[in-house]
Image (cartoon, rainbow, N blue to C red; front, side, top):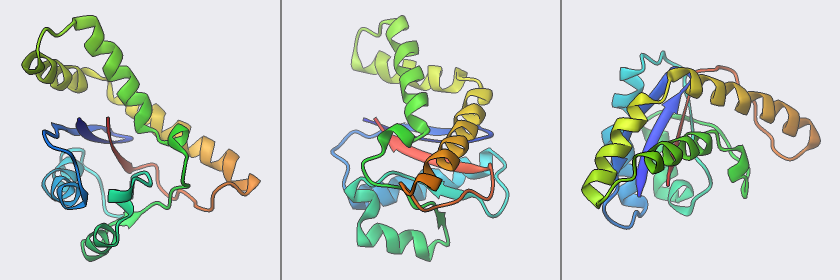
Length: 159
């Protein structure tokens, strides 16, 4: 499994998760990788964090951790993986990796890291813009209740 993040400015870190992820591991991954990614992407104050409604993301302990760290979290509609902008990056990564035909797990991990780094930042920007457009389209229909104030957002997911 992989965990990665991105913003409109490009991709952040991508890491391999070697064990079954639970809430404690998710919080550790965020602690070790999210802020360093935000700093590397030169994110300014006020950026908004988005993750889906996976139980480890919505666990009380995770919500409390995010609150204590003063993260602004974008509310996300349940059962909406089609709205999650990182899914486009996962799809692109899978295509790129498949083209290289890794022969073992070590090669797979190396190729994933290499290809993640090669994805143009403009792809992350367009994924973010597309999400904003989609949300503006979906929200008036009453399907979700949230707004986007800044284009600088970070999205995480695992695949």
